[in-house]
Image 1 (spheres, rainbow, N blue to C red):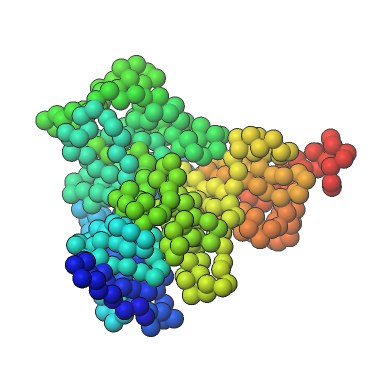
Image 2 (cartoon, rainbow, N blue to C red):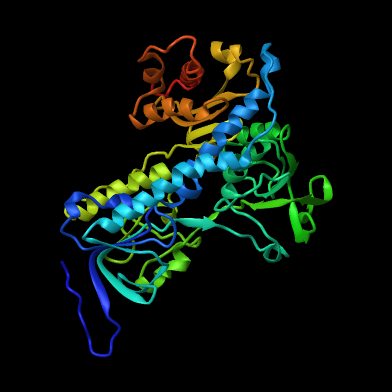
Length: 480
């Protein structure tokens, strides 16, 4: 353990073996192997980070009742009498955070109880190599892990700084359900939270700069989702926002969109225009830590930053803004902190993700546009849910599974699912891709349950195999 050093006239600096900034995925770094280390945990907000307190977990706990409400409106289609009456928003919020908040408090109390861990509940910033200032106190670590995440990006819109608005950090704890929620942004946060409030009875207007929602998804998925979203939301696409102003009942957004000039008034405004890393607030450059043009802390394949002894994981390094990837990176960094002569690498395989809106979206690997831009040979197929027995039973006419494959290796290089339980179905493809299986092995190397919805994936794989065979026939020089 490194002892504190004192210099006459200098500000005292408390020395640690390890300083961890951020108690989200960073909180999982500490294990029994470090019981002899002196550790500082710096967390200015809630233990558990974004996912536990204002991200993945509470949003999905809200999305589940929203999904139930949506399904209740569809009973007549199947010859049963169901309908949605209303939602008790305060009761829903109590259920969600009545479960989450005690977990957060317990996590904080546990860390505070450890004799070798000091918890600093304040903001921090670098003042030198591996040295930070926290609430007037200087601390320094032999090793430092930056796991401080990201925050909502607030666009420079005239008048926005003069009106009350919410972000994903605050909207889920709102006291009253909006009558008319106005959403700025068209990404996954807008899609998921828009679904929550629309399904539970609010009118929702989505204002998006692009002409498509979820533009980061495969174009065909994005187009289908936008088409379906128009049935539930008031969409203002291709928009340029001119100003935001307060009204007696809430806010007004003046804009020009594909349909012309509009003034949209609602009682609640949600700004969901993306997220930005917290590196600027940490002043990481003062610690010799390099960032890219977007402010992401740059890391090598082992998670090391440009500063010796400093590591970065999770949203702040910009590799993926996904909790499951941050957790994986935390496992790697934890190993590397303990085994400096046997470093492990961050997972470089395609990162899967899902959007829990209505309908769900699950994806992994290349989009068709990325495959085309690569200039490499590829095959693309689309298989509708309705062509499989369970999809047919659901009378699903809009959902599909799209696969992009490499005909030379007969592997799946991209998978995109939009529809019921897409997040589950895509996992079948993630498993095969990450284990290195060919489409042939994935399709015929196991028995698929009939008539489960998973047959959508089986049949899509078989269709891709046919496309590979056709490619081989067209290109006799191709391996086959």
